Length: 264
Image (cartoon, rainbow, N blue to C red; front, side, top):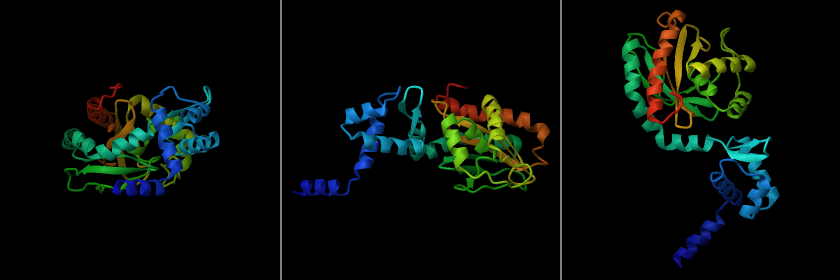
């Protein structure tokens, strides 16, 4: 009787469309090439209109992608990334500590690791610099995507669909004359960032503060995080950016290697 009671309560409080959405994603996970909505509706015995509305919502939220060339729906990496962050933030930080310490000891500047969370970046861990004066960033602090080195490092390595969706949904706030607020200009910069796997912040948010970053990629080449150094422009001058960038990329690549990235 107790079991029956729990079953009744579970049924009473269930959300049918949520259950259907989860079943649709489970089905799509078995078909990497994607499925058309009619097949999904037939396979799961769901009304076509219901499947269409649910899939449209999942596309709008970034969990599914519609390929117009085949008219098929496919899972994006967002679901994987959400689950990965949920169970692995501490693991990523643990994996990154040695690389972060190496960079911190060499440059004596503050080293940070952060990841993407919805429409913002969020700091996972900070390793304070060794100078008497350092920039400090608290764990959990958010950072903008369009005007920071880590934000650009992550954005540049997202799929075109995810990148476009984020750029069209965030506010490209101008902080000073160095801030880039033109999407086309940013996209052009992303091409170079993706090619080099290094991103720079030319005092685009805080005058006198420079940042250099590189993405951490998983086995699917998805940017699950980024590491970067931050410091005053007098200690991180533009002429030394290439050397700093190369060393930070090496550190990020060493972490990506452990995660099975195929680019490094």
